[in-house]
Image (cartoon, protein in one colour):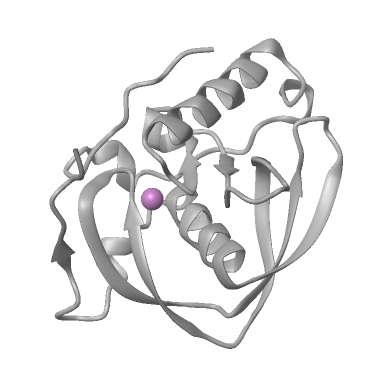
Length: 161
Ligand code: NI
């Protein structure tokens, strides 16, 4: 496993749309390594989620870790089937270090994705998981949280030593 270089604010790749992982590639060594590296990279920077585009790979792969007893979740080719309600939440992004702002996210998200074993899963997510799935699926579509923040809520926070 390896830490991958993050892509930051201003990098044009962050605005590009990621491509689906073809069925026959899902269980490949290349995707397995990408997933392992993404999880390691997310953990190194204490992120809740990371999309492959943030390490420069335009594939529809997401990792999320809420640091609960479930461990990291891997979502390949995710689609949001439906959303319900709204939540106003504080949000950051590993591609925008030390910046936080309020955004409106769905309160609930029903999503479908393929897990790292190739199994298609349907999940009904609430609260932080719903927020994380919405944020990361946006990344796959080239959309950034900074473009949907509630005006006047952006804060720069000094990194902790
Ligand atoms: Ni992000």
